[in-house]
Image (cartoon, rainbow, N blue to C red; front, side):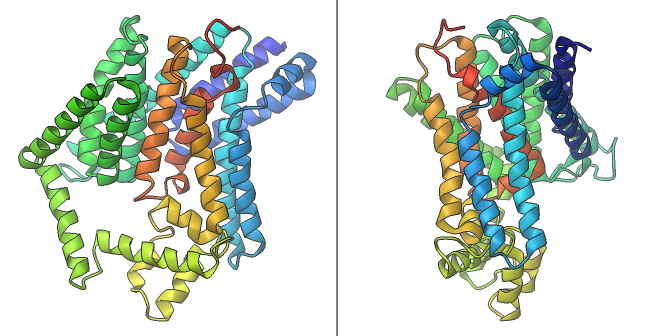
Amino acid sequence: MTTTAHRKILMVFLAVFSLSLSLSKTAANVLMTLIYLAGLILLARYQEYRRSILSSMNQPLVIPLLAYLAVAVIGIIYTEKLSDGLAIANKVAGLFLVYFMTSVVIDAVQGTDERAKLTENLIVIFIAGVLILDVIGLLTYFGIVGQRKFILPVFPMHVHHIWFANINAVGLYAAISFFLSGHGSHRSGRNALFAAFLPLSALSILFSTSRTAWIGLIVTGLVLTYLYSGKKRIFFLVLGSFAVLCVLSYFFIPIVQDRVNIGIADIAQYAGGNKETSMGWRFLMWKASLTMFLSNPVFGIGTGDYVVTMHRYIESGAYPSSLLQFNQPHNMYLFALATNGLLGLGALLFIFSRIFVVTRSFTGITPGQQQLFFLATAVAIHYLVAGMTDSLFNIFILRLGFAFVMGICIRTGSVQPAGSG
């Protein structure tokens, strides 16, 4: 087989991975393994491909992600629970590998137009995968699939409702990016996909009952408006519209009203001494995580020692045994601080700061680059916000979804000025 045929196989694997990411953990892992193997074959057999790969290895997020991985590996050295430490380091390695392979494979494609077409197709296929998950979710809600007819929250195919909502949020940003860049009105088939996806995705996020995703969407929408509108008047108009929409949703959408009321009740119960609620458990885990951090502020307790340390706290009577149902504190910042200290938090924030450095310029670039930068910025902001109530990088579908989207958007080839080849 020629190098061209191998490249096409690699593109097919990447496209199928894009589709399977939202639908099957097993399929996504198999596809990424095939991509790694195909890439190694190309590297071993073809000097042309080696040159192409080597010239595109210096991707913008390589150093931040490697730094994040290095901190996790260092934390294994002094961790008490080695198996948990290796498992977490493996997750971080997967975050790096998916980003690296996606960005390098795309940038190895010859020709600017061909790369642009591939990136667009990968985003569309990813949206299609989320749409399929949403259709299954709708069938689940109406009792056509499974045994959860008219039961909320909706979580199809055993995808946790918070994960389900947040991967839909990523899909929404991807779909919106096409329209804002002017790429959403050229193909009837793509428009039909978006027409089906946008309302169904919004409904799925609502039926997920995930306050994490709801808050993430609201804050991300406001921040993006502030960044890209160019006029304060537009921002305040959108801010007012969001406020009105939130109030109307509370009064006229029972799902929203129930979730808000439950959250308020949980906080009131926590203040009154009842800790055994959804919000109460979060507050307790956050408090415990701060205690872990303060015990070793610079390096943390060890990459794999969150659960074992929580066990110790519970045995001492400081916390209820109900916290054993969680293997992370539902806050990615506190998880980084607890397990890897200030080094861990710094490495985590380094990833996001690098994304914003790359995407901060929205002028002098092509519409296609604007689309990629908008999508990367939206996803990064959403993860920063949603990460305050969940450890998103601990979750397979959200971890690899983030890495894949960034591999598409934050590449050496995506940061060239308009007119460059």
